[in-house]
Length: 173
Length: 284
Image (cartoon, rainbow over all chains, first blue to last red; front, side):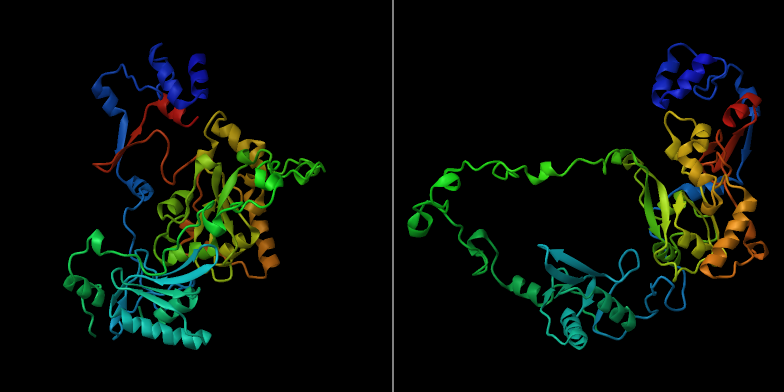
């Protein structure tokens, strides 16, 4: 018994290795399950149950992003669901995997600020025109933009992620 | 609404009609590549080659970084002090703001109708805990306490007072307990839970510790409600009262599961031992 207590104090992996050589001690049934009783006696000493399995299912991490529950409007955290039908515009901006608006800021070389709109489908030049008009109203300046037709992204000089996200949610994307 | 499916548009059309691109057809954009400076050649690169005139500068024998000509340098004048001493042994708690928790609940990643635990938060990918970096759990930060509006039963390791107030104001339940996995190692669970490391957190009602006196917790809830100026809602009359008051046993790691149970995952069954010796061992 004393030997089993000192073994328990050590790391589990080391204790398992040490336990194999001297043979199973009397009281440490939990470390190495060596049962001298017959198979029928062993099965009779076990209760099977299925009610607590839901607690086990709760522990398994899901492998897919769950669909968000239905909300009427803006949620308390500021997230708002996309409109049920896409708005009647020549372009569409899909939501990201985590159901958010795909507008991101970038900072390169310590001082180059850019805003990136990803996941654009349709007429990207019309989106560029609308974005330039909207930012002209917001800032009063003509901001340089870059359209990448292959990756269907739009880059704007400066950090405008807050304004662009709000504008796109108001459009219903 | 016209949404042409073909991506790329005009650029791809142009590419399809031009001849094949090879190394012979490519050229960098004029003005994009600048010639590099060659030292020791020509009128401007030659002569002293940008090294200056005589002295340590030209001869490359300058002293080490930080040397101040013999005056005691700055990095030796300032005395040593153990600000960072033992920093790699200090317990760290990953912060979780109430704003992020509300965002997770709104997007359906965390279920407010079940008790929220460290396992639930990690499964929802709401926080990332790194035990190898001395992370002992999660702490609640009260950023977003004014927009928080969810009734939840949450158990984390630490929380600021404002965060506890925000949760209780919305009629939720809060408790703090050490994450049992952090007690792994040489100390046994019992010694760890009652040790001096955790006693100031787990036994104090202000933190709603799991070892604290329930009467003191009730008084602390009232005191916090008065301090932050809200009426404490009576959760015993709530329909979810049973879920909100669910607390784990002192030595329990997972809700609803006890040590010693074997889980049969393909058949979705749990096998529990009935032998006395085994039960005694697993509850010791």
